[in-house]
Structure formats: structure tokens, C-alpha cells
Image 1 (cartoon, helix red, strand yellow):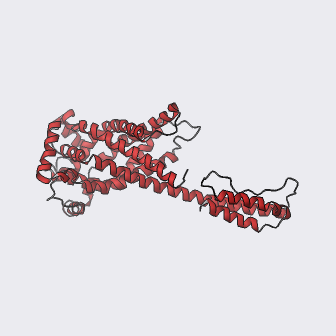
Image 2: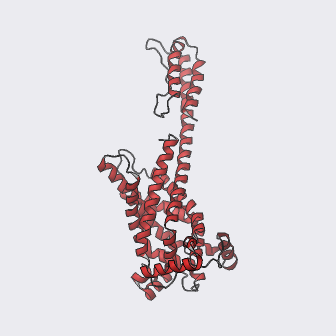
Image 3: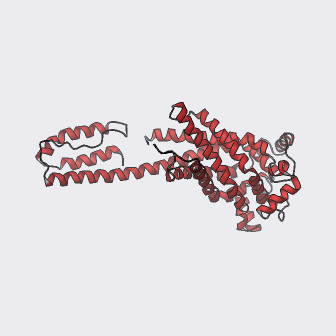
Length: 375
């Protein structure tokens, strides 16, 4: 309920009060209420009933005042629920748009990285460029974004859920409340929980994206076909193959990324004496967070991709367990060229993606809250 409706509702109750002393003050009270309605500011004067100091408050007065107070509390509770719902919707919208923009920007690099992660082919800048050139020659420019429809189908709900759940976990853990020191571990925990929540709920879409990224378009022509073929030929549980290493990897990744980003914003506000960093500064904070976050969980990302794509790369029996995949990759390809293969590309695309994502989310969230006048 808007504040204007609240004011009119309370004014209606006041208009029925007939106690002489209160009736004498009714005109002033309603004048204040009318002034309040005409202000576009949520911190305006609330409804007031003026009782002259010389007037002895009777039982009738007390009952009537109690009625007004009860109405105001009920309206305030309803308003809080409405505001909370609006905030959730705002974070869902801002998160979805931030994720879509970030992933679309780095889609060509993402497809290149997944292709090398899923095979034994050695990674280098020259090989990466050769892969992109080959894709362009065989399938055209749009092939750089092959699988991006699956990426969007996944990243829009993923980012919306991740950012929204992160905001809720921040409230639950009372992070950055006024006059309260927040332990660094709480920021890491909020990020980790948000990452696990979003990853678990959208994992089949990530599986489909990986399959489309490492195959030609004649294998899977659409996102729907990926699900149909996997369901018919490999069984529904295949849609969750690689989930465990994914969750193990997202804990340090999301925890570190969100933790560092929120910490940098907090220190910025403390030492710069400015309430909020600008979008460019947010992007820089996000880039640093993304760089550290990507590096902290990269080997598990390799394991995840090998397990997701094993059945379409001829390694169906080779990558069945986390430990088996980890040791096989290390034994056959080594540490740098195996478990950390493609990390240098992640150092390019990771900071770009996370920087754009965090900066876009915060900027959109602030703008939408301003438009809707939500504190």
C-alpha cells in the first residue's frame, strides 16, 4: 500500500473522531496529512494526532487513538511486505540482465575454453586463434556464439537466482549492518551459499551448454534436442553428471568472488568517504574478484567439463568419478597443461565477465530502486 493510501485511510478514521479536544486539532492533523501525500519522499512526516497538553485524555480518547495506531501498524506491515517483494523482483531482474550481458560479451572465448577443457589437445594462444579461425571458416561468424542460446537459457535464471539469493543471505547473516563489524568469513559464506543454490537449480542447462559447445550443429541442432537425446540415449541422471565437482568448485569460486567484491566495496566506502563506487570502479573490483575466484577453483572446472562431455568426446568410460578424472588428467597431461589448461584464457575472460556482471547488477539495482523510490 502506498503512503498516500495509508494517509487517507488514517485520515478517514480521524474524521470520525468526535471528542471535542481532538476534533479541535483535526484540521491541523489533516492539513499535515495532505502535505505528506504531496511529497515524493518516503521519509516524510508520518500521521500525527495533536492533543492539546491541557486536555485530559479520556477512555474514549485512548480507544480512538489506539484504533488509529493499530491501523497505522497494519498498514506499515503491509507496506514492508510490498517493499520486500519489490526488492526481490528488482534483484531478479538486475541479476538476469547482468548475467546475460556478461556471458554474451565473452561467448567466443568461452566456447574456445570449453573446447580445450573437454579434450586432450594442448592449449596455447596460437591454438586458440586457430580454433576460432576454423570455426569461422566452417560455420561462419555466428559459430563463435554457438551454444549461447543454451548459455542464455541457463545464465538468465542462474544469475537471477545467484544475485537474489546472495542478497537474502547477506540479510540473514546481517552483513554490513550499521554499527556492526562483519567477519570476512561471512562474506565468503554468503557468496558460497548463493553459488551452490543457483548452480544446483540450473545444472542441466549447464550440461546442455557444454554439449553444444564441443559438438557440431549437426549433432545437436537446438537446446531442446540436447535434452531429448540425453534423456533417450543416456538416461535422465546424465543431466546431473559432474554436479558434485561443480558444487565443490563453486564454493571457493563464488565465495571468493563475492567475498572479495563486497570487501573491496566496503573498504572503498570506509576510506574514500563516498557512499558508493561508480560503475567503472565496480567493474575494477569485480575484475579483481573474478581473477582470484577463477584461479581458486579451476582444476575442478576441468573435471566438471570432462565429465559433462565424456560421452560425446569418446571418453565415456574414462571420466566417471571426480578422483578418477582428476588423477587421469594429471597423469596423462600434467598440472599446467592438464588441470590448469586454458587458465590463461580464464584470466582474460574471467575478470571481464565478473567485472561486467557485478557492475551491471549493482548499477541496475540502484537505478531500479531509485525509480521505484525503495530505500
